[in-house]
Image (cartoon, rainbow, N blue to C red; front, side, top):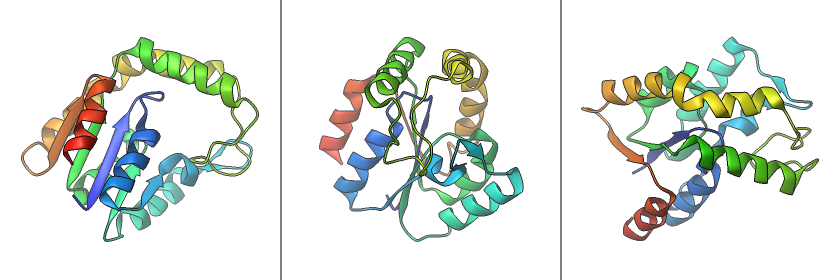
Length: 167
């Protein structure tokens, strides 16, 4: 494994898992949120974002965490391994709420400067509807790449630690 993508719903633990895996494999970890968001939670325009991701995947070795399904077409072909954290909505929602209240007003290490944790009901709705709205497209992409990529789907948090022990 030299080029790994970690995807999943917000709150699934992508960044935490990517950091642990990166340490284990001695690979640099790139957090897409830290590259996408500009200070004040301003989104990077789509064309610019595609250029940023193209540069990110051009490296020799990396772990990239973040969903951004509209650019799967850039990351999936470049990866050798795709890990999908396919956890229940209630777990992801609980983790997001806990993360916000624990770090409210602070900027997480995986985010851009000027993007502090905040209460955002649009974001809560996105997490709540993620499995219903975004999972089908994710599963389609995973199926499309199942013959050419190492695809790993985790459905329980306990599987992550077991996997890290085996790697």
